[in-house]
Amino acid sequence: MDVHVCGHVAEAATGRLCRHLLGPGDESEFVRVLRGRALEYDLCCTACDTADQAPEFLVVCAGCAVRVDEENGTHVGWRGEPGIAERPEPAPGPLVRTPLPEALRGALDLAPLPDGENPAWLVLTRDGAIVRWDAGTGVVAEIAADPLPPEPGFKPFIDKELTPRLHVAPRGDAAAIVHDYGRYGAVLALATGEVTLRLDGGDYWENTVPFSLAFTEHGGRTVVAHRTRWNALAVSDALTGAQVVPGGDGMLFHGALHASPGGRHIVSDAWAWSPVGAVRVWDLRRWLDGNTDEPEDGPSARSLCHRAYLWDHPVCWIGDDLVAVAGIGGDELALLDGARVFDAGTGAEILAFPGPRGAFFSDGRRLYAAAPGGLEIWDAWTGERTATVPGFVPERLHAAAGELAGRDGDVLVRLPLR
Ligand SMILES: [Zn+2]
Ligand SMILES: [Zn+2]
Image (tube, rainbow, N blue to C red; front, side, top):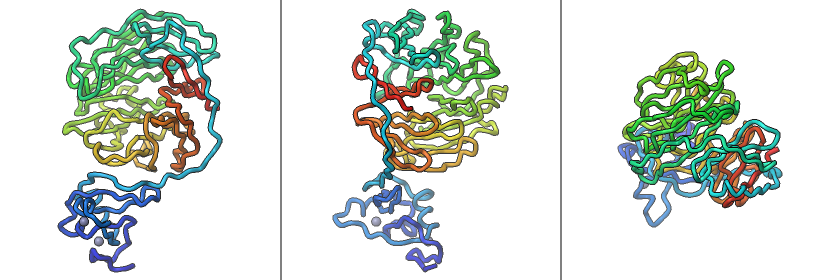
């Protein structure tokens, strides 16, 4: 082991520092300068960042690098480029293009229905009706006329507009229509089209988050987790509306909920004052078994990451135990495109890799990222990009049919994954 410029005899850090970040300078603002190899980076102060010549980087001990990077300093940006790992495999496909029937043109949303031989979709029409569309046979059947109440007093938070969104239960027996960034929603029995539960998420900063809602299965019935106030999540029986778990008070503004595919865990993409985004996971079964406090201080609750000013960002389950969270860094203003993969049981971050951006989807095998230029497929265990489908930007994963789907105007574009 060597004596480093920081004066310590210790293991050298992978990342180097400019000399101004040593000693009293360790509380400075700094940028991470990527070295083109995976996520490796050096750190320099903001003066070195804007100087005419390239910064001089010094090898320091691991302790000094961590103190600046993760404890005392403030990360304000990324420079350079990460190294994207490629391991090409044949891309899935080909794409299947199906024009929407006349009645469904201009649809506001569509969500996969798990039943049926052919891929079936629940569609929210431009008039607010909920219909079932069998994309294979073309049959359209109305389920409900216009169950979502209007919100005439809505005031947008920054750029977040009132957005109707459909959710479908894994068993296919219930669905919900909610206003993301709004207050109201409704749960429906799909067999009858009847509203079984009116949802009211409260009127306190509800315009900052997608409406908290997730379906899962519990004891052979479909249940739905939903907001009842800014800081309370309850669980109700989706077909009767009866309460299963009452909402407990907490400190988090709950946002989008993501139940794991097998119903073992659930994530809330929440925020708390100052504001800081807080991605939180807890054991869904313990919660459903009546441990009301599980989302806030239950023994299974784990905070996966905190990001200043950042929430309502892609999160997706990879199977039942791993959660992929989009964006690398602790601040909305210093975020690198990439994925962080966490173990839901322990809360530990097990992998981070640069590259993925846009909405995330997973079939439990691959991470699919809907990048603006088209789909990118990643191996979530190695961080390697295995394929791309340029021009195809999916909005939904139809897990039962094994396909991703997006829209090109009024044409449904589907990518079979197997
Ligand atoms: Zn410097
Ligand atoms: Zn040192």
